[in-house]
Length: 532
Image 1: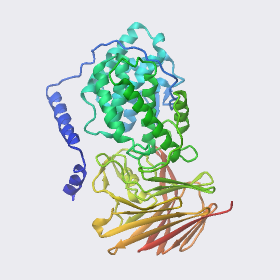
Image 2: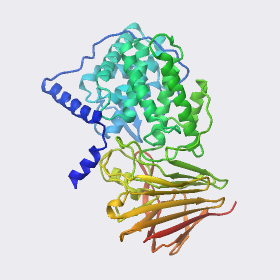
Image 3: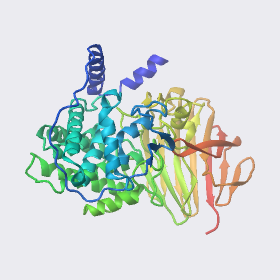
Image 4: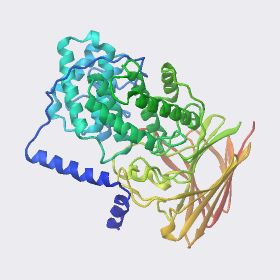
């Protein structure tokens, strides 16, 4: 069983991922054996970049040495790699977004940069490529915005550490992971190439961006990991690249205009997809996604306008999401594959799930993402059981495991795809001799969802997670009544209402109701809207 799980995880990886996994692990062991340290004393003079205003950052530095990331507040304890609050918390600390907060002075922001530089040799994650990528862009933004307020000595100290860190990144781009991490490496090396006027950084960045943007941004504009949150994160950094490229000589590097055009075209596509997926100007929490992490769609929209980018609302296509908009409700149906096969770290086993808003307010919601720490909660939030879909025999439709792993995965076939009727079939339970079909039929005042299970004897359960402020007024053996809509279940063998916990943000759980419907073969669910 364990061997099969590893095999079905590893077999989807690219050869280069496997090679660089082994190469980087061997390199780390070799460095440890020889007690090698990175040289952070390499100096190259930087040059401030011209730019329009960047989006405002979420406030994470609370003053007096206090930080609040992911709804966990803590005083700085002198350790940049503190393990007390989990890997994601300390990664956020090392990104150093907070130096760009509107309410932090230049002097205090520099003090934190200097503190980081002075302690870099004792920071076990300082050399990790992803934090270098985000931190590097933040430092370059900071220096570009405040160069005139920094002394020559301060600038030299920043440039020495920054250039040294970028040499580490250049030698350790995340080809073992690929996906969003590798793309962020490319964005950051573009920043470094312009700031240091470094052709070597430029050529590496150009190679990454040409390859990865064409692969990672799908034909309908979605990022291929299919997380609206990460879509916004990547879109922001793509716009950042366009921002800092505006005031640079087009002839400085070979292929400069080609990359700028590529970035512009992908920005237009991503903005168009974002326009098509948002509901009430908020992102749907699909796959790994949470509120108050990425820049909001509204702020991204304003940022793009400052950069003179024009776009129109797009049409959802190959990403597999569908957005049905009626006067009384909006529904997002997930008819997507899990994502890119060689990196499903942010995917959930949520095939055929859906989300529903009635009169602009959440009605049926996702369980959300509260943690990346491996364990019971992470397992649950990635499971099929945690989504508005059907579970067979208590198993996941795709074999998610660990914090970011996936072995066997459901394959989706779209059978019907028109304005008011959508139907898909998936093989996530083929190993149990079962196939699952789900159809959505949408009219102005009701949604009909038909689930058909074919194959061997099985136990099927459909789940419907209600928003926390939705009260159940009445229920019986096949009906549930709320203020906004009534559920009717035809084919229901048993109806249960369970109290569960969902997440809107990291490290915050909210209690709500989940309707659980046990059935055998066919279940017809009618959600009828109440009133006008």
